Amino acid sequence: MIRVLITAAAVVALSSCAATSGTQQAGVAPDPAKSQPVPTKLVGYLPKGALDGKAILPPPPAAGSAHDKADRAYYEETRALKDSPRWKVAQQDNDLWQGGALKRFSCALGVEISEAQTPAAWKLLHKIELDVRDVGTPPKDFFARKRPALGNDAPICVPREKWLETNASYPSGHAMVAWSWALILTEAAPAKADALLRLGQESGDSRVICGVHFPSDTQAGRNLAAGMVARLHADPAFMADLEALKREIASAKSAPANCPAPGA
Image (tube, rainbow, N blue to C red; front, side):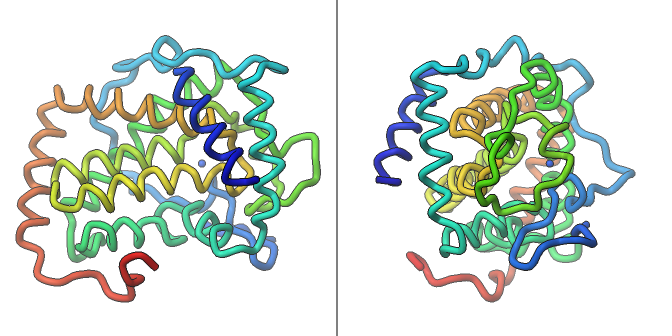
């Protein structure tokens, strides 16, 4: 039943178009608003206002519409995944930098992404996350869609803290980051396209499995990410860093350790 609803919700979505908490619960991922360090000396590539997400994205599904009902059915059905292997992956994906998401991208790329070993990749991916915040926050605030976990006590993979109420649901910033990373790393390492693009999709889906986004939120995040990456190609600084990334990947000497076996 879950698989059917996932497929249905994804089809509808395609057609319509945030430091670990000191009170972290056992087995629960940290608040994304506290767990993703970004070097303060870096800024994004795009100037403020370079893209208007409010103009690019359609509104989220209207309350009570077929699309909204499919979104909510997906949320309800996938609560049964609590403590499953897929749930644990969603917890890893919650923290982009320290929780496991970056490691998964390293494994898909076949190159360790770290400040010490691949500084060009490290810098570029951080700057992309900053661009996602600049581009994705205005439509979040404008549409102000409430997250699926509000108004119920169903299990989610992060603590139920204040940010769930103050940080809106549409579009998904995590899905934006994951899809942006996947697209850019694919351009830099086309031989790894299948694994990277699959991971970009899965990492966004983790937000829905986790219970903090609807499927339409993640699809909107991917759509906005694609537009942002296209716009970045007109930025000379980004293009220079992209070429540096390509050279760095091509010259990488060793694969990341402790990656799961293919298909695992």
